Length: 476
Ligand code: GLY
Ligand code: MN
Image (cartoon, rainbow, N blue to C red; front, side):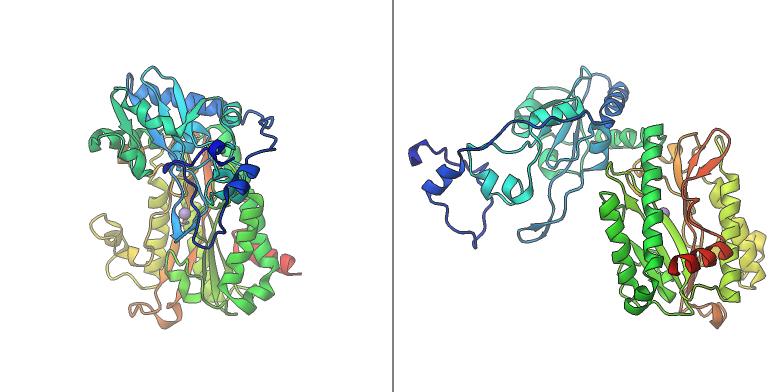
């Protein structure tokens, strides 16, 4: 029997561990027989046709060139335990593929091949011994045929990639996603950076399917916020992590994951912009800033922030400060429309916040001087920009050129956040003691329409009265 058992080569030897029991030939041979290996009937994925159009546009930008977009592989968390896999955004956008270790290649003639790692056959031990790729350990991966049927693109085994890339063509690689793929093609940093830039810029304007995906992610996020308020007694009992965990359950149940680590910041933690430790208490009388977003099944994510009073009622001071941030957000939203600068929302919000800070007597110079580009001293308490693009990445299209993004005009179909905040650090000696340790941010996700914006996260209350009513209703 053992003579008929193909030996695993070093390349495809299953990754087994010290503590795994031995696999005698008799067991291996027996395991390799008697399986139903037919492909499943797979429906064409709605993204397949969109991805074909996206690839054609990408190919048009680089005529006669080969474009290589890896999806990435598993990352080790510790020893033999990996993080859950999530495909690189550009790879997923242009291929629709979410399986690990795949590489999309757009050939010079505009045709495309997805080099994938399909489910292993029964001719090696991989399917029952390999923890990363074995069907019996990690679940059944799609076969090449199933991937082709779902994504409408030619699929080859990833083992063929190296030989195919060796067939000469002017090649650009989306680098930094897969070290193995980066190593297959000699690098030209400037040309490769151009591919990354164009691949990112083409994602700036969302089509209606993408906007629907973003709306679904926002709707799931709204439900996640509601879950958290329904759990309020236990949130107060256990602290920030109970809220984090409550939201996470919704993200995993209705979506793929979180779009980013949830920021759950009680009291002074809210003045740390990316507080993801979430180890603190939730204290009555304080505020809690919750910046959370569900990533949907097709990887589009929400990014929403609400700052809530722990008792369910804002104190007069909290209400005043919250209202100032809300007015800044409304000014930003009113400034956004096609043809307007991307930064128009930011500038409008900063006008409101700088005047508010002046009213509080905090500015060391006149409000006009503080607002001048050479000063910006007010930003000690506003810290960050008011908007970023939103899509499959929470900070979407991050490799776009400034002229196409920060310095560009808004276009119908762009989706962005509007998220002003005020932050008074606990150790800031330049603010009155009563303000120290208060952080407030309000963040919504908006799509640019023909004549303005639509707020995708309008279902979550934003005014102090509406928040208090919403909390009271959900807490019963
Ligand atoms: N949601 C976190 C951020 O926008 O940076
Ligand atoms: Mn954001």
